[in-house]
Image 1 (cartoon, rainbow, N blue to C red):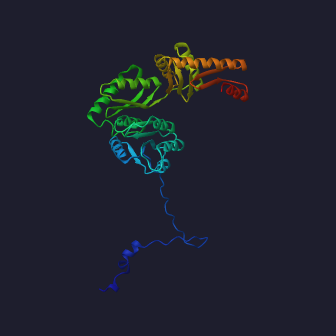
Image 2 (cartoon, helix red, strand yellow):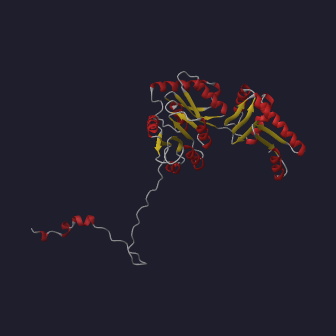
Image 3 (cartoon, helix red, strand yellow):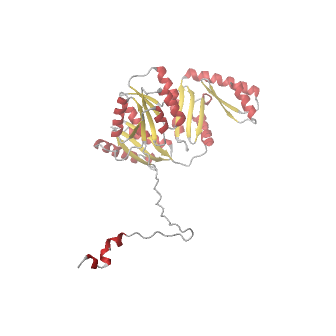
Length: 371
């Protein structure tokens, strides 16, 4: 039987399966209607928290190895322009190891301070820098200057506190596992921390505390318990969050002033106090280190205080000099504006005025008088 005698259906079997359907014809225009391709998925890649590094290749190679062992991602930059351009929310810290091509470290720090003010910058050097150069770096925006490799441990501990280390790296060594269990048990047994939710992780003897507490004093109590545990080399507690019903900043400031006047021997006329979002900053001069520590301990226990930073110089002679300057300023204001209630604090060559006046012109006149 020849091929011509075969049924037509048998000859065109494969052709029928692969035959395309005719395109739909639009009744309005008479043109064929083409199918649109599905929209491409444009999902942003998730940026992993990392440390950006720039500078000396030898130092950076050793630093990258240490950070990789800790599970901290790094991003090596070839030039200062690339470093400044690529700085983003995922850049948790910048490490600069001189020499750097095309720019000085101070210039890079100053540029980063403008472009990315919330990103901390650290400088790493093989030899101790001259005092003048180190001061210039701090003024430009460098948070700290570390000697390599002598202060390598301090730098790594600082970066651990800034970058979220993955859990797969935590408790890797048997000693760290035992240490984490011990610290966790001691914190759980502390009566003052029974209502806190804290997580304990250990990396090479460094205890990392995270979680939430009701007050700043509880965060410091947990850190103190961890430091007293044998085998703990350092404690990172900056990630602990204070969650409580917070009063207004003005209420917190008034409470602190009232507390220090009643139970502290500190002279508030030589201290400046600022509260912003529960963060307290105390600056000025004090005559006794013991009184300063006691006052700081009292401030930490107040409801609503989430952090405390002190820029206080302890010097009895400086306090007396600042106190004399305050009396001079108060006398001049009382003579010129007897009806205005203006508080004065002074330390060094800085005078801080607080209070209320009826006009903006009066405020400018008071400032000009004190200057």
